[in-house]
Amino acid sequence: MPWEELVSGSDVLPRRFYERPAEEVAQALIGKLLVRGKTAGRIVEVEAYQGLKDRAAHAWHGLTPRTKVLFGPPGHAYVYFIYGMYYCLNVVAEPEGSPGCVLIRALEPLAGLELMRRRRPGVSTVTGLASGPGKLTLAMGIGRQENGADLTLGSFTIRRSSPEPALQILTTPRIGIRHETGRLLRFAVAGSRFASR
DNA sequence: CAATAGATCATCT
DNA sequence: GATGATCTATTGC
Image (cartoon, rainbow, N blue to C red; front, side, top):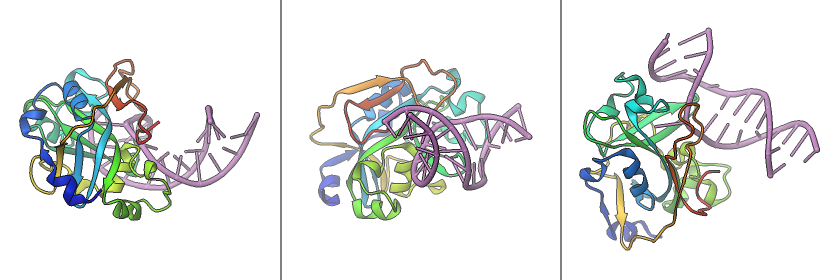
């Protein structure tokens, strides 16, 4: 899909969209558009992290230099480096001072596919371009520089598409964590080939 | 197919 | 000094 058409038919989500419990924001983000520069994709998989009351969350230990952004105002990006190799993208949720967030885990690529392919050499299928938290940051060129970015302004945003597709949402436990594994805080588009496994 | 190993480093104890 | 919100290649059935 042409980037211009995609963006002209969509609206940036306002800050108040993010100012509620992380679990609600996570579900509401399914189907929304993540746009960065000339690349864009539909969010098909997310996980909610509930801050101080969630042992699996980075913010569980409290305010540190790394978690500072999580304690700030909602609607900003929290990007962290993991396993010595990858970056993961989160969106800060809940009112300022309450460090809830939503991990973006997978996208259906919609625009800028050529650029994404160049950033993911060796990946032959479109489904494999952004079907995981580390993969999507590579495909969209997201790194340290984006930590703290305001997602309600500028060229890095999350948008509501019109019309919004009617999507069946699946709820499951979160992936790759050691604590709080029983909580049903992962949400994905049912049957999506673009979600992670 | 499923299971496993290796890459590689910021962050916090 | 250990750990981790991962990915890929490789091995074994």
